[in-house]
Amino acid sequence: MVTGSAVAVLDGDAGNEKKAIIVAVSSQAEASRVERGMTATQGLARCGGLALFYRDRDGEEEAQLALLEQAGRWTPHFENTAPGICTLDLVGVPDARKNVQELAAQMAESLHVEGFVDGRVGIAGTPDLAFIAARMGDPVCVLPAEPAALRQRLAGVPVMALLPSPSLLEVLDLWGVRVLGDLAKLDRTAIGERLGKEALRLQDLCSGKGTRLLRLVTPPRNYSAQIETDYEIQELEPLLFLLQRLLESVCSRLASAYYVAGAIDLTLTCTNKTTMERNFRVPEPSADSEVLFQILHAWLETFTSEAPLCGIGITACPVQAHGQQRRLFEASIRNPARFAQTLAQLEALFGSANVGTPSPLPSHRPDAFVMTPFNYQTLELETDAAVSRVREEAKSKKKSGSKTQPVLVEVARTQTGEQPLGLPMRRLRPPERIEVVTESAAEPHDQRPKAILTGSVRGGLKDACGPWAVSGNWWEPACWTRLEWDVCHESSGTLCRIYRDRSGWFLEGIYG
Image (cartoon, rainbow, N blue to C red):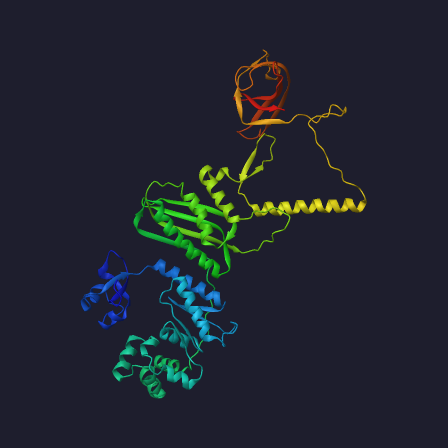
């Protein structure tokens, strides 16, 4: 679109342009007598070069939410005045009266950084005057508080800045009243009798007499961003480009509200109307877009979809930012961001269900555990608690006068005549399936193993101890039971643990 062209924004169905209504026009279109409320056909009849665009309601809501979050960055007292307009109460802002011009410049710069290219800031004594100042701003306007200076500053402002009704604007135009200075000179009694309360309200506004209370609001904590493309995304590079833009927008809003992201929900929409959702944990909550981008990038490198993508959505779970005290002589993760990226790469390779911290189940079944999401902060807290307990025990022993001696653990201490502690067992995971020859017996408990025919340890058995019966979950359909034997190889003397369950014989481990 060429700068300075006539533009109109339509509200309606994109497939039925004839019934779409014009809701906003540019100054060039307004000069061609294109007005709000006209249909697209009527607007084109008055201006042949009129460029028509349909409004994006989702984008407008997202922009309004971003504007409210910017307002909350300066003061908790603000009003959602109208679409694209927000009014702030700066009474409690430190040094607001001393450095008004500098404060307005900082606000305008913050709006520009957030993406509001044409953002304007106006500061005045009343909410309505601040609205007029914002319309006058380029991009900043500060109206004086003195009545005489205020009337002089507003004298040349067009009446259109007060947004009067079309009928009142038409009457004032016929009277030749086109600026606020002319409106302020009219007799108040006469204008009230002829034009009513609206004209009196506008006259009070231009003289600085009108005031009102703000309807304070609190923006919802919804830190999300979506984008729908008009083209198909078939490669990783354009997907990452759009993803980084969304992350920068979300992280900017998080930082302005002094929050960090504890988790990220990623939603990908395909052209075949299917949707894929994925939740990413952030081990060290952060509002740094680069850190969060690396977590998503590691997973997307191994991601494949059935159809091209046409939409991306990101939602951040806001949490409070907590500082962490690093101790001098205790180990901790130096770079949590790098650790999070490594976790994401492992989950992309092996699956999220196979990466985490193993937690034992309340069962006697060997290797009965589940994988829980890894949280190194909890691990550090547990380590700190364990270190504190050891220190307290050492202090108590020192006070009681007992001396602590180092404990030496040996595999076997047969030379001194003490009872041996036993041999360690190297477990095989998964257990190795084997074939075993047993003595003939009617009961499985009496079927003593005699030889192992297959597997890494094969041959005759010199001795066998057992069986030891282990079972569990008998109240469920997936109950389990097994008979364990400790056997000794006849030629090598290797000690092994074998067991038998419903599916056959297995070599569980080797002693020594």
